Structures are given as C-alpha cells and as structure tokens.
Length: 247
Ligand code: FE
Image 1: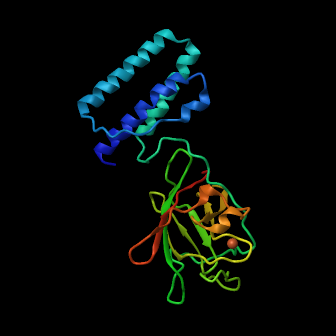
Image 2: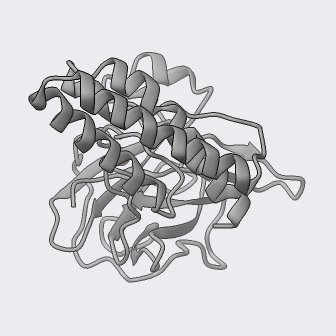
Image 3: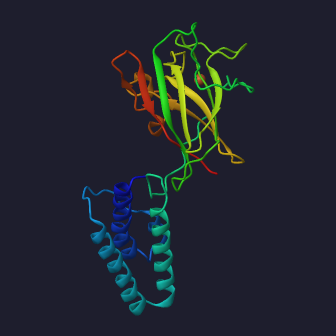
C-alpha cells in the first residue's frame, strides 16, 4: 500500500471512530467503520488528527464510567489495528452465502486455473478475486474447486471437462479462466464452487450471472452471488468476485 493510500485508510477509519464512540453502548455497532474520503491530507494534518484523537480519548477517560471506558479503549485499539492492515476494508463482512452442491460435483478434479483448452467452445470468461476472512484478511493457499456445465449446458460426469481446483496466492488472489456456462433445464446460469481456507470449513456455493431471465424463477439464485461481468473489446468477458469464508 502506498503512503497516500495508508493515509486515506487511516483517515477513513479514524473518521469512523466518531460514530463508534457515539454508539459505544451498542457493542455490535463497533464493527461498523465508515468509509470514504477524497482528501489527501499532509503528514502534519495526520499527526494533528492523531493528537486530537488522543485528547478525545483522555476526555472520555475522565468523563466515562470505567466499564464504558474499557469498551471505548478496546474499540480504539481495534480501529488502529485495522489501519495497519494492507487490506481494503475495515468492515466485518458477511460470509459468502452457501448454496446447494447439486448432483454433479466430482472429487479429485485436476489442479488448474483454466478450464479452457482447444476443444472448449463458448464465450471466454475470466473471474478474478480474493478469498478473505470476515475482517478482510486475505487467505493464502485457500482451495477453490470449480465445476460447471459447458457452453451447451452439459456436465462432464465421466471425465473432468470444465472442472478444476486451484489455490490462492500469498495475497489471497485467484483467477479462473473458463467459458460462460450454458443453460440446462430447471436452473438459471451458474458456476459451482467449493472454497476452503487451510484447515477451515468448506463453503459450497454457486456464482450467478446478471440479466438472466431465469434468475427470477430459480429457487437457488441469490443476488449476492451475481458476477459483475463486463464485455471486453475482444469478445471475452471478465468479472471479479471475492469470497468471504470462515478461517
Ligand atoms: Fe449446476
């Protein structure tokens, strides 16, 4: 993270302290840190702000009951710790929604980041993203096992076409190269995946596509699992999706 970004990060979290302190009688609110600032403060401003924060803490210390003070201090420590992280969020994020495995999962898929070879037809799709814990920490070496129908809507149940597993890199990133799956009876368009942090529980879920008529009638569909697909100039599509898992 650049120094500029760190500053912005510091300010955004620090600004979040005001509502946190205001809501300190509601512990569950402590996880909500407001985001968003477009200013680029100088180091001097940051130092001044930090001193102000310390002064505010001292004032609180002299006016609050001991139990409330302890909670306030704990909140401040949590927020400062969050600033030091290299991740892009200070919010506690909900776990990615789980979905049914369906009937076509097969164990022992090949390890590969691309499900596409010369024989595969369809519109190329690249999905990139991170596997994260709920506090935004990237999960290195998380396993992602993808399986899907081919562009004609058929699963390969005798072999491993359109199936593959991979592991996130040191920063929690993965990339899947595949094709847009075809529709098959009874379901909207989707890609299956199992995600697992090292020694964590397995998240089984599905990714969906925007603008699909069947999204409205598919009982498994979930809006939080819709890919943000974009059309590229070369006819391929790209999307990003972050998985939030229990570690
Ligand atoms: Fe399926």
